[in-house]
Amino acid sequence: MLESFFLNLSLHLNHFPVIIIWIIQIIFCYICILLALKYYGKSGIYVYVAMAIFLANIQVLKVIEFPFFPEPMALGTILFLSIFYVQTFLVNIMEKKAQQNVFILEFQLIYSQLS
Image (cartoon, rainbow, N blue to C red; front, side, top):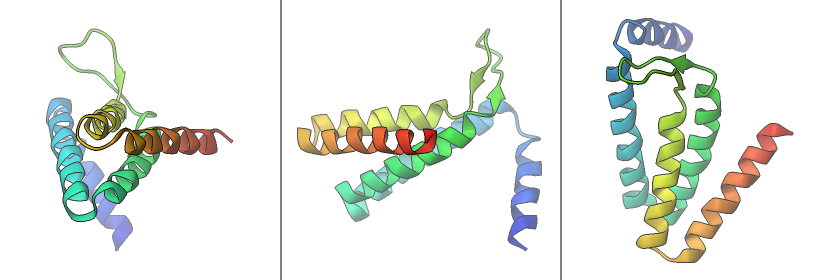
């Protein structure tokens, strides 16, 4: 049942224009960041970074073409950008130690996926 749900969802999403998918993904990422921060604080941000790195490395395999960019780009770019946003947010709003923890977490997750 769950497999058919995701199959139908992916079939429906393939019919949308790329820009619509891109905008939906941007809105979803930033809503997830705000909800994680509101309900779980810094711990929620750490979990978001871990999930975003994992999902972005999967999405990087999908190359999309935008009508306003001459070169194709990877779909995981939005998730990677949201991670950079989280780092900037932690530096400016929280303390520097929280940003360093996110930075170390990113490298540990990326290294573990390469191994």
